[in-house]
Length: 485
Image (spheres, one colour):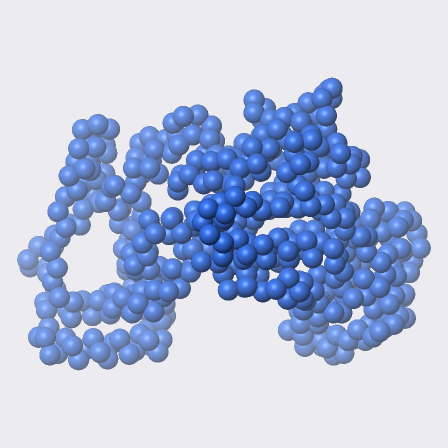
C-alpha cells in the first residue's frame, strides 16, 4: 500500500514543499506530478501497472538553490525510501571506486531501516513490558520462576569439527552454565513472589530504580574465524562476509556488563523488540517499498558528463554513465536481503552543468531522464524570504539557539534586507553558492553574540546598522570576502 501522504494532490504537494523551500516552482511541479503518478499507477490493473515506468527527472541549476532539498523533502513527504549519492563516487568497472549497483543496495538498506523502525514502533509497548519483567528478574531473582537451560546447538557442534577446536570451545563457552544446587537462588512462595513483583514493576515504571547499578548479560553475534570471500570490499558492495551469513545459525555470545537500571531497560527493550519483529517480513516489505516507491537522487551528474576521446583523469566518465544506464533503465540487482528490480524506482539527477551541458551525457542516458527542469539562481528577494518565511528559517534557528542562553535575538526588517543584500553581493564577487552563503554571513555576523552569550544575557537587535557595522568592511573588500565569507 502507498503511504497516505502519497494521496496528496500535486497542488498540495507543492504547498508542503513551499513550507521549506523558497521558489523553484517548476521543479516542485515536476516532482509533485511524479509523486502523484505513483498514486495513479497503484490504482491501475496489474497488467497495465507493470507497463508504466516513472518519468525520471534531471534538475539543472547552480549549487545552493534547493535541488537536493526538494528531493529529500519529497521522499519524507511520501514516506518513501530515499538515498542521495554522488556520481563522482562511482567509476567504470576496472577502476578504483564504488560499483554503481551499490546505490541500489544503499536504497534497500534505507528501506530496511525504515520498515524496522515502523515494526519496532508497533511492538514498542509489548517490548517495554517484557523488558520491565526482565528488570524485575534482575532486581528480585527470588521471584523468577526456574527455567531449564537450552540444549547445545547441534549445528555449532558440527562447525567445531570444520573450523577446529578453537571454534568448538567458543561455542561451548556461549552455552549458559548451570548453577550448583547450593548456590541456586531460593524461590519465594508464589503469593509472596507475585506481591513483590507487582510492587517492583510499579517502582521500575515510575523510575524509582533508574540509577541503581545492575549486572546484565548482553547478546552478541558469534564471530567465525573466516572473513570475506569472493573478493572486494563489502562496504562497496563486493564480496560476501561468511561470518555474517552464518552468524545467525550460531548461539548468541553472552557478555556481562554493569549498567544502570534505566540503561538495562533500554537494552532489554531493544532485544525484546527484535524478538517480536519478523525479520523475513521486514525484508519482504522493504524490498517491495524500495522497488515500488524508492527514490534515488544522483547528485553531481554533470561531473561525469563526457564523451569518447577524453584522456587522462576523465577516461572513465563515459564508462560511469554506461554503468549507470542499466540501473536507470531497469535491471535486477542482487543484495544481501534479496533481489531488487529497479524498473519502478524514481531517479532524480542533478547538476550545475557549469563546465558541461546536459547534451554531453551519452544519448541513452539523456533519454532516461525525459523531464528536465532548470532551477533559477536566487535573488535578493529570495534571500529575504529564506531568512524569514520557511518553517525552518535560519533566523528562527538562531533565535531558538541563543534563547537557550537567555539572549533575546530580534531581526528587524532593515537588518534582514541588509543581510540579503550582502549575501547576494558576496555571491556575485566570488563563487555563487546560493543560499548556503546565508549560513556563512549569519555565522560571521553573530559570532560575538554566540561567544559571549553564556556570560551576557539580554536583548540583541539585529538591524541594518548592526549588520553594516560588522560586515561592511569585509563585504566591500573583495580579498577579505574571498577568504572570510
